[in-house]
Length: 144
Image 1 (cartoon, one colour):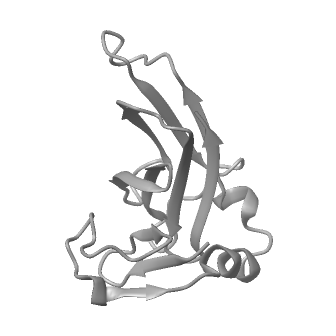
Image 2 (cartoon, helix red, strand yellow; image 1 turned 90 degrees about the vertical axis):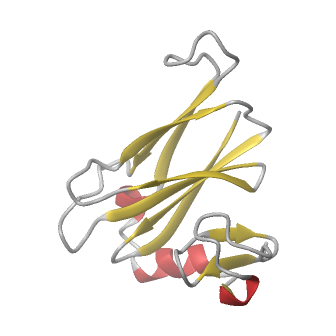
């Protein structure tokens, strides 16, 4: 699979670069292709998978919006919780359904690296991409 990274905000597009970044609005010319994006992060931090790979749980019974058909995607960064320090933290967590971007949660070092996405429709596959300020991009997939 091909990956395209927005040079403005770090958004990752699967398959092809969009005409406009859905996160920051940057034009297609601001995207660079890097098909080894996730492999490079794992190679640069071989011991880091346990602290960087998102742990994704998909619940089809929504706890927050039970009156609607809702799917909760719970994300925790790392089996061993990723540190959140001033110079080493998870800067964002993005959620994709069937390789289409849905939403981003921006984090700071004052937060724990965990979020919940409340989706109207889960599709077939949920992918979560996170960005570590020191160790790059990591992803995980889950079936919905």
